[in-house]
Length: 292
Image 1: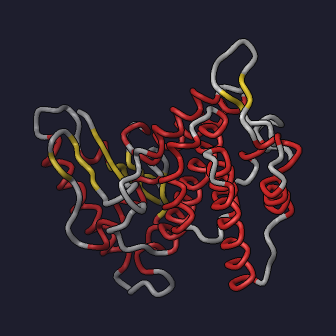
Image 2: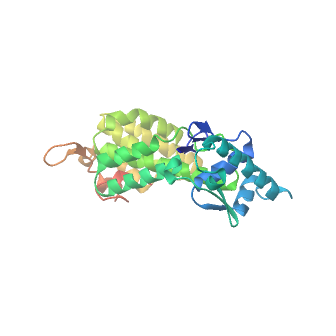
Image 3: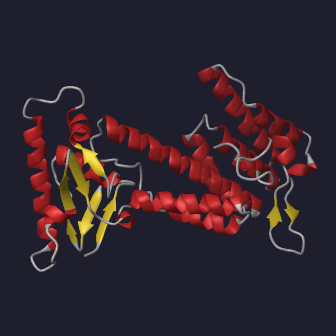
């Protein structure tokens, strides 16, 4: 029996070739919350709060049981009679709650988190190419905003925000690695889109400035800074951070530390801008990863 649950975009859940996604809104919420916490007990109180927030009806507990029964019927139809596994063994009633008893790797959220962790570890070990690949693999699991077609109560709203932060953090780290690998030309289109979507995100703008500078477009790098500064002042009343201001001054001065340098013994270029933008949270040689 192969299960595949996808939350990083529209909700999709299949056991074998059969979808187990309910059509009604609240059962979809139930499935999504259980899947986010696959293998762990989700308490009845948490489920009631997710489905009805602060005003559950008197019949909420009974209605929740009905939703669980509906979901088990979907699961039973998918696994079939000859599988040797019952729906109650996959959607388990526990003391005080319910547990979706599926392997962690059957849920895309957990696969993405594992890949991001492994990517971070690779970057911390100085393995930029491996780290970029792992983070790219994680990011390709996203098919739009997480849980985009699922009504969200307080628990799922938090999960959505957390997943978006994870996605942006992975994007930032992957782009930093790609810059160190000399891939600035191929990043320009992606960074154009990302900075338009995230007009207050200093790290992405810093990456964009470096990529433009290395592509011989220093004037456009300065325009990116000007636009970021105007947006921060207009919307937040803040100047860019000292690190971004140092990067701006470095571009103005055509500072040699902004140029990529060859790895000793040949190979791809590395970045050496540490003195300009400050120490990295991952490694001192990787300053443009320090924005997460």
